[in-house]
Length: 85
Image (tube, rainbow, N blue to C red; front, side):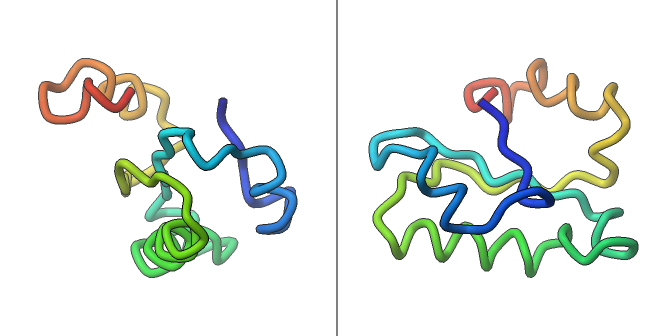
């Protein structure tokens, strides 16, 4: 499943997660400039908070622009990231 924090609070997010879920925290580096949600700092803050609350964050992924579908699809095929996607 994919959840966007643009439309929900942290508590709403965690209500949809189980402690044994494998979680990839995905952030857009472009969005931080326009809506304040993306970027490395926000990604790490969310991942750290989830881990601190006992959730299984298996990867942190920062992408230049999440709206470019080719960049997103590329993660499924690259050797270094395919196992997570």
